[in-house]
Length: 89
Image (cartoon, rainbow, N blue to C red; front, side):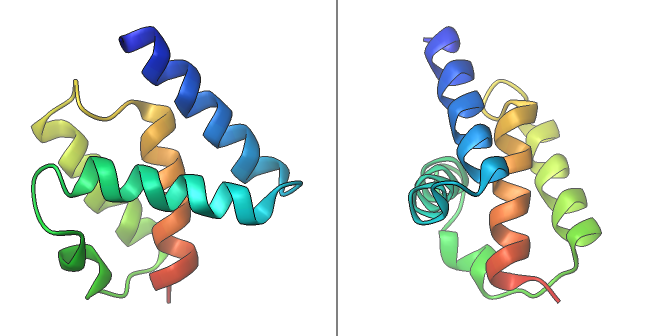
């Protein structure tokens, strides 16, 4: 299960980083955000905030620290990029 999660995260990171499939990357990043973040709280909690990239990174890494087995570093990066894109300042 962990191998699949890591491989999926790396694929998402590649899509988002390459920009070649921006709409697919955005959809994948949104799905990852919704799946991972709503496991602990409503997604609307994050979507009601505006932060700069450093703010989103601090928040998502803080959440990772609460349940380290739930969010990989690659997933944190994808989620931070997604939140910064849609709710960044």
